Image (cartoon, rainbow, N blue to C red; front, side):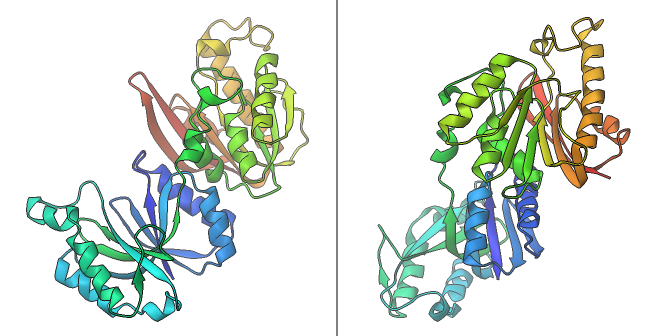
Length: 359
């Protein structure tokens, strides 16, 4: 079957990479067919159970659809696709349906706006399906069909999953029991966790866990958690935040450059490396560093060395830093860079994401 993933427009590269990372983590074979205007179409065989797991994991995908047909974004061709679709493979006796039109924000020119913005296309497509013997229910349909319009293509789809946007809103950092500024938002944290390829019950490490935001997202998909932070108040706060979501983990007050774990014991690492003044913490082992730059350079080097040591062979580390120079440093510690991404936090801060594999 062909599935269409309607990706979040919040970032150019992360949503697509997250989908592929999740498919790989779930051992689902796939072939990319189309990627255009935030729509990723992938050919795969997917069980209902795998679809449920996939949909619960993804953070930067709005909806997942099964593609039932494609055409140019012109009314006559769109309605022909709807008419030729085999509803017997979709609808059962007594099923009701609704048709929705969804337009990508950069859809086409002024002369086609009536098609994209009006309800006439929904009505006409609905009439075609109704004539096949099925009833309309706009409030609680058994099946929802979506005409997904882009500049080049209309995808006639069956909606399989729509992400509950409230789940990430409800986990925003300032709503947790323990809060500290500057932390990664839950949706981004979930994407980073997924990029690591962590599987349920595997061992997941964040060596700079802070308030526990990344650990929360890893815990919610079933990983076994270990978090480290040099500040006791952060470790206690992270523990409190995990408990708020019914999660537990081994939280350690310690130095990320001297990780108290065995060699080859961790399945995945995700962390947001320190880069601000708050990183210069008395008692961290770097208090007498000549400057913040020297301190951070030494910390990054020693941490990478430790992450490489504790990761299993072919294990992945997703590292966030405030400089692209981190990419070249990764090569020195026998990591293979699989991907890199950049996203802007605000005017004076961008984060650089490296997906590394232990060789």
